[in-house]
Image (cartoon, rainbow, N blue to C red; front, side, top):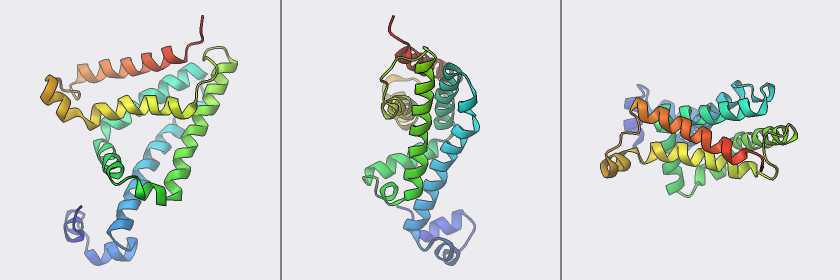
Length: 180
């Protein structure tokens, strides 16, 4: 919804340079989305989850997702806006689709390793698990103002944030635990 003039002023560049490098406002928006999604995927890969024991890797992956969303509300805001627009830019970007498919592959390999090691239950769908993790991490940031207005709790408060981080890790690890 921003005007190119406003974007140029806020980024200390010119309209002409935006059009030169990106082609227009829509292409700039797509580039920003690609960069933000890419940052999340790069952080996941940097964890080295393939080299860690499955339970440690899963714990770290959940913590990373939580920390990333908490530290980058602009990512949450842009993804929310993209959903309002029915995911048009994401659907049109092979880069975003490929980068995000990679996390599902990573999750599938991690679940398989955990299942083989006897520490994760069989049959967990990697996309469903990704959605479970992302849902809580995303919701607590995207709805932070309404949650505070309604319930009086500040999700950014250090003690609330620490409690929520422990809670999502515990919920995911309990969900993955093999049946007794």
